[in-house]
Length: 579
Image (cartoon, rainbow, N blue to C red):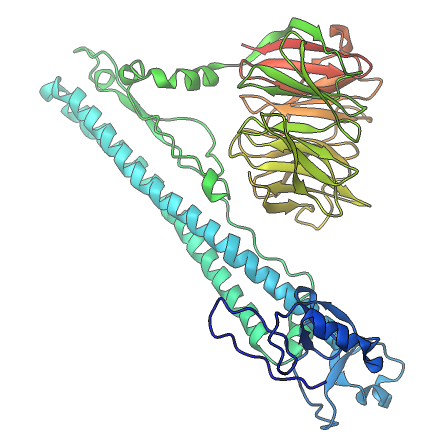
């Protein structure tokens, strides 16, 4: 069979043609043994030839990258095509017979080249498609913050001058002092933001250097670049974290002649931690604009909900509000509040999935193929649930149609949560002796995999419940590793393993204050633990003395009611613990 040189497409829309001479059909297959492109017809003919029967013919997309031709310096008539594993140097087949390589192990160089080539392509794709664009978006947010800081500072100046005009000459000294104080705060804030911007300049430059390095590997014909210089486990530095500026507040007061400083008002900086920025460009919240006088605040009804959230605190005692039974389930292993309709989705250990109203009246019931029926409700109001056996995530739309939404490949999906912040979908998965948390966007595109800490140790074992905190932390209830919390970028923040030697974490949720609530299913404990968002133990929120036995699931609704489900009973109990 005669092979022609590859034809260069005439336009960008031209398909890849078969490499057989005079054949212009679409290329679909590739022979790794002779590195030849083939259509389906030519493939069949190629495989009918007796000497080609053992050739490795694959789909074109699965082809091995052809090893660049490099002649051996010692044996000029031979091509370099093997790697000495002990010496880690490329050789020709004749070199393998030399005494210096006696009893050494040799590896097919083309296979190594293919693996290294794909590694470079993967890392380049990650840099170009995610790291660079995300870093640039965050850098733009830093610049935007600087602009808004200036604008907010100008608004404070206006308020201060308006207050000062009514006091005339008596307040000149106080005004000058406050203006200077504000100037110093502004200067300090802008200096910090400038430093953050510089951090991203350096990081983007670092990514640019990496791109050049990988491109040099890809364009180089020197095989040592792929065998010796390019490491197997390449680690790219994480995107730098930045913090929101801590914005001062200006509080005006009713002025009188005896207290000029109080009349003019004062500048204060709220004593709170800077908020970690999200690494997802679409999820970066706008800068807080809380710099307004108390008189202005009283006119802003739109901030009532926010103010209520800030003043909320833990109640001195937990109060049972009500309880109801859920027909159609044997127990309550997982419970999710569907806030926009005032309904609940509940599942048991046998895969029964039931939707009820708040009185326990069944609205619909679905039978899933596996136990527990881990599920969540999306921002669009659709229910999605995992199918461990088929390794898929299904979606139930509001018209009750069920479709396959995400296929998880070799991984068994366990826990699942739809983010209230940006709609991303977090899934805890296992595979043989591995476990991870994967982030998908609303459309099911894979965005992020979280599997190991910064020391390379596995974070998860059985991540069977998962949720997200108000600061973007991913909180996972892992049966063997306790509560494992990582930040938005996947960096391990802390793990909580209970207060005693045995701790069996089950259902987990967070509330409006960032508390983490987790069920301890250990038979001698049977409690619900309350942690702050940094992992500090606050209290045993619910115990057996309050009637809790075998707790398995928890969730908090928009009215800060806590719903608790248990094993061996289909009763859901509702508590009030925030005031």
